[in-house]
Structure formats: structure tokens, C-alpha cells
Length: 132
Ligand code: SF4
Ligand code: SF4
Image (cartoon, rainbow, N blue to C red; front, side, top):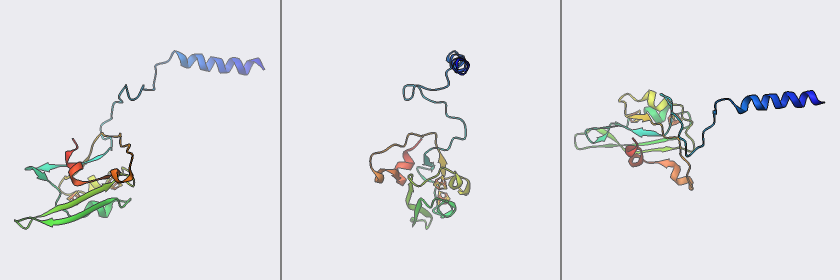
């Protein structure tokens, strides 16, 4: 009866003096590893979004959470008049980034996506352009 108790205490005490592996979040911040797939951001070139509304990313997206609507500018170039990602459905697979032929979208290290309203989880083009 006493032996299992002692074995349990031995394990407990052996862990008490090991290096702490938990973080006092949010006061301590985690080190985000390279390649982490967090919130998306749209890349910019010459002060406008690089996206050419080719529809590849909404096509490959397994969660079907990307909405793109194409527009045409004065030079008859296509651009994304509307670009939205529903983060409640996104599974952060990164396929959209891999599929993009013009490097218009990337994933950032932003992982704190809590929100109070469902509507606020739909990230618009303007919001995604502001992400660093
Ligand atoms: S990370 Fe995956 S699920 Fe999320 S928007 Fe991109 S393709 Fe869709
Ligand atoms: S982000 Fe890239 S893949 Fe998606 S519609 Fe724009 S250009 Fe195409």
C-alpha cells in the first residue's frame, strides 16, 4: 500500500526540480517557430494588393472559407474587389498560400484570434492588408 504512494511522490518530486515547460501566458509570450501558420495577410506591391483575383485559393481551400470577387481596373487588370476569409472555418492548412501564383497571400504569426461576435471572424481585404 505504501509503495505505490512512494512511487507517486518520487515522480512528483522529480518533476518539481526540472526546467519549467509551461508559460505564464499572456505575461510570457511564446517563441513562434518559423513556418508557423497563423492569421493570413495580403501582400502589397506598389501600394496595392498583389492579388489578381485568379480564384485559385478559394478553389483549393478545403474549408471553402475564402470569398473572392474580381474587379477590373482602368488598365483592364483584374484585382480582388472583395477578398474575405472566414476564420471560423479556416483549418490553417496553408494551401491558399501554396496555390497563389503571385505570392499575394501569406500566413503570419498572429495566433490570438478570440472575438466576441461571429461576424468579426470574417476578415475582410482591408483587415488582411493591414496585417504585418
Ligand atoms: S489556410 Fe487552408 S483552410 Fe484556411 S483559408 Fe487557406 S486554404 Fe482555406
Ligand atoms: S490570393 Fe493569390 S491565389 Fe488567391 S485569388 Fe488572389 S492571386 Fe489568386
